[in-house]
Length: 290
Image (tube, rainbow, N blue to C red; front, side):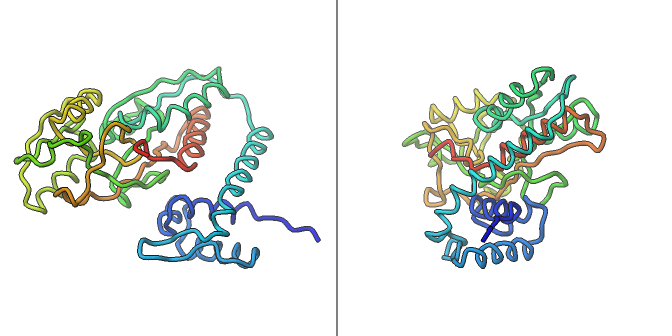
């Protein structure tokens, strides 16, 4: 008897497993939560086992789900490689990509490297700025596409990932104990700025800004030397810095999404780069602090 997996079911399962939430997975897959739930149920019925169970923290993989997760990723990778090989067309020209300062390194560097290797005839220009500035430049047409960090659920862009915004301080540092709280932000246009200050105001905490000049290296230096704390997405926190918690007297910060924005008249090279970014970002990513 021939038995075949439905790739769509496998992709839905892998996304739910990676995100630990059917709601977030539905947003990323452009499906309703009910449709995601139905697809997971179909897959469980096919395999005659439960893949997820709920606990106080939300969805958790069962033993069978853990076994399937690794195999599902291999199956999806092979599927996508075959598809690329059979459908790829030559693209050439230039493409201007906008990226927030904190996502240039470990998050997007591998994606840009693979794109450049696959499409050597395309010249990539990288524009780094805050997310609000990048969206403004996209609207002006000065860049061809951009990745932006935005409060979850507020964007018209395509959701690639959902992450916790966390407080960051020096290893065994004391800056978070100071009053007023010293805060270092990359720029006064930083996408996180209003959310951070709103959380502090809600808890009645006083603060002062130490640095806001558009330079992530300087922000990192002020935090590393324990002059201030900052707020970054969990996956972008360097291993030599600490993620601070509410137990240390800091307010809880909201969830942010990493979104892809493309104009309707996107060029072929921009569409192809968007595909690479989409596939690269939707693979499991470990926190830089792990």
